[in-house]
Structure formats: C-alpha cells, structure tokens
Length: 169
Image (cartoon, rainbow, N blue to C red; front, side):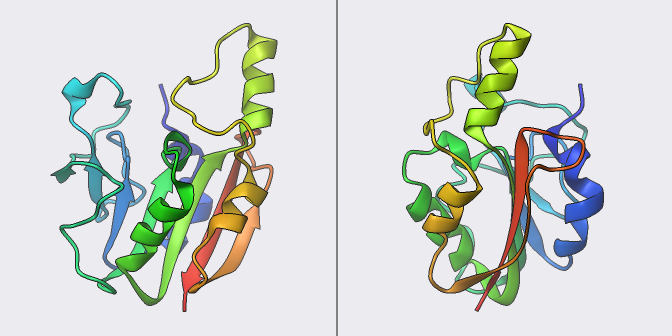
C-alpha cells in the first residue's frame, strides 16, 4: 500500500528543504532528512506504510520538543482532519517554524472523500472530525502570522485531496 505522501512528494517536497518535521509520517517521511513524528504503533490508530523511522513518538498537537521559530518547515499529510481544534493545532505547528519557513499540508477534502468512499461501498475514516473539512475550512483557520503561498485542489493523482502551503511571516 502506498502512502498519501507518496502521491504528493514530487510536488510538495521542494517546499520541505532544510530542517523540518513530518507530522504523522506513518513510515513515509516527505524527505529523507525530515524528523518524523508519530504516535506509538501500538495505539492501533496509526497507519504505517513505509520504511522511514519514527524519530519522535508523541502527540503531534504538542511540539514541546521544539522552541519557537527553529524549523524551516512543518509538513503533515492526512493528520490535521483527525483533530477537533484545527486552529489551535495549526497555531502550534506554525509556532516552531522560523519566519520565512513553510507550513506544508496535504489533506482530504472530506465531502469528496466521503463521496468516493460511498461510491466504492466503503466507510470513510471515522477519525475525521469535520464533515466540512476542505481547503476553505483550513484557510479560515490559518494563523494570522502566515500567508498562503500556493494551494492545489484537486490534487493530481489524488482526487479527494488538496495541498496548501503557507509561509510564516
């Protein structure tokens, strides 16, 4: 099974240079040098589809390991939608990015994803918290100290996902 990141790497990895994090990496970090953060494999809720090591085990909503303004990027694929408090999570992720660094998100458009699941006769991921989760939903919750660099919807090769890159001011 391929990871969601594998469908986005060619387009999004260029925004992930320098020192950064892959939050919820699931064994397939966006770059070879990304610090991969994920929950314990024994949690039963973690997808593991690659060979990248998990460097830090813990809650990606709390990046206490890192001071403010120290990383060049934070990347996350198909993780943010699993949290109720989207705006707070984004604020925490942006906190650790240095000014000029990137927040790189690859996420599902929930209505499109749910429709694709229904057409395939399968249940959508029950961990997703927001029926209206979409590019617009995330844009509205970006911290005020960021500016959108680019967005892609629908994403080539992954019809129910979108990408959003924001730069920290």
